[in-house]
Length: 350
Image (cartoon, rainbow, N blue to C red; front, side):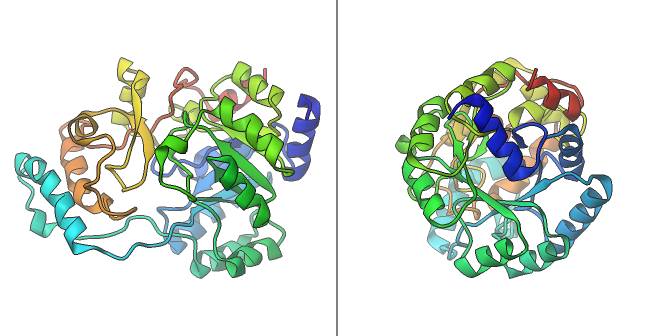
């Protein structure tokens, strides 16, 4: 697939000026970033994994009032785990020295998930808005829910971290596949395996996925400038998904601590960690990752690990420390700039 055809395919599929998807990034953005990217000609995305149905309705009401351009809503589709008391206790035992350090009584920490998978309740909200694009992480929802999304004309895309996952997604009806390289920040989209040795870099994964599937393939991971975009397109990508480059944008809600880390030498050292949620996700290495992991057998299944570490994050952040915060970032922070999202978007296609 040549570059011109690839751009044409994604532009035609999603109705965009630029073959770009702004990666949905829960915790560091709201609809403001999505609106800015949409109005600049890319596909802005709203991350929904940490929203209630009521909050989702509010975000979509705000977004659709501010742009007439296509947009994307993104959901996790993990299977909620059965709580395991022994595993939860093992996790709290691992965190006990830190709880003691901050004077936190672990018996007062409630258990909880913090992230909800796509459900009929979310679909009810979406049906009122009929978003042009709905994307998923960790696979796809149940067939009945997926068909409901498609029934109002939405294009469906999802992340693949291996060729096998890309083939599975194509077989189950996606309109495009995101080939998510190991460089990408935030949660890995892996769903057919939990073996991180299967995870490869973007420019190793991308041509293999392009060769294997017939649907358009969107490259994600480590793409932070126009040169990276051109490289992805030269390897057959129909477009790119970019997240980390927007973390310092004016419209992002990235915290002051997170912004400072992204601008520091520490941002050159990222790793996959399961300490914050129970699933592998890439972030800037900090104290808790150095001392406990970054990958550990102690945390309970995703997303139950969040509950016991959340009070540590809150206490440390109150003292100006990101030692217990998920400082999500990809391996390439060179594109991070304190500019408007529109400026960042247009710079990717110079």
